[in-house]
Image 1 (cartoon, rainbow, N blue to C red):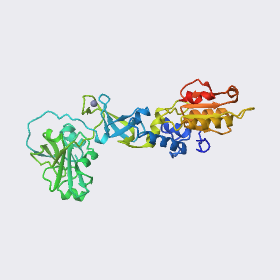
Image 2 (cartoon, rainbow, N blue to C red):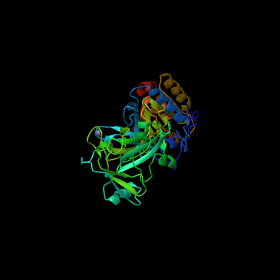
Image 3 (cartoon, protein in one colour):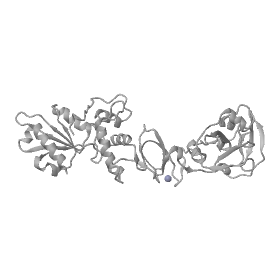
Length: 394
Ligand SMILES: [Zn+2]
């Protein structure tokens, strides 16, 4: 393709809204607009990537530092919108809301009798634990939902020191929404002091640590009161026991003893469904230097950036056009910068756009039947005879 047909507009400055280097270079090189619109050069690159994505080693061909599991592929990036849990040791990778981790039950103890205690102004786990002077893991946290498919009231119990993952809850019981005040009252619960003990028509769903956590302080379904020493199954029945907890950094890996970390990432793929815009950004984040993009051949929109420098005696443009046709006939994809611009401007653009090879047709070398060839990631260029050019590129 020709430079002018692609309407490439490179930029002198980084856009002031660039949140990452990769985005900044994509805008400067004319792949994206400042408003993150895909421009024709990026469309060209994405269509190449689509063709390549049928290859089972797609991501290794792109030389991207990805992290993945059997379902999904991610690219770590501080501005990425997907939070994932990752184990550095065994490479366990999962979305934060679905990640599993090894839970440690606290020591077993004898079940004590239930006791009702006055707990004024203790409608949060923090205030309750402070008031009773017990650790948060000795409390039961109640969360109340309504299942959207059948309006079933769903009462969830997790340990007070843990956070419910709504994604895990939805995987367990189906789509839910927060219960309304009316629905809570109807089930016999009291917000702030809710307890699974003595509810009517509630689907009680507990985290799998709850059956191993004796004598928890829970609400009494009476404002200003809590129950000490609640024990599931003894004091209330359970309909569903499942893992419902959201993992966090520092939890123990489900597969090995290593501690998990959280990483912000871009989502690149689910099985063989790819997010090519995110892949484009991941490529730019990974492959750039201080002059512009440095795409590997597998990812670059073109194999070769071909340019001419206007001559005094020879028609370098005509020769470049000839080379353009020959290279394409040999199956090499070429971006031909056919503008009448100064050499410096074209060199800059070649560096910005980041095709793996630059070929320059200049008068002096051409008088000896040579053109200049420069790999994008190398400092030196070399002279190559025009009739050896295809061989050299290949
Ligand atoms: Zn692990």
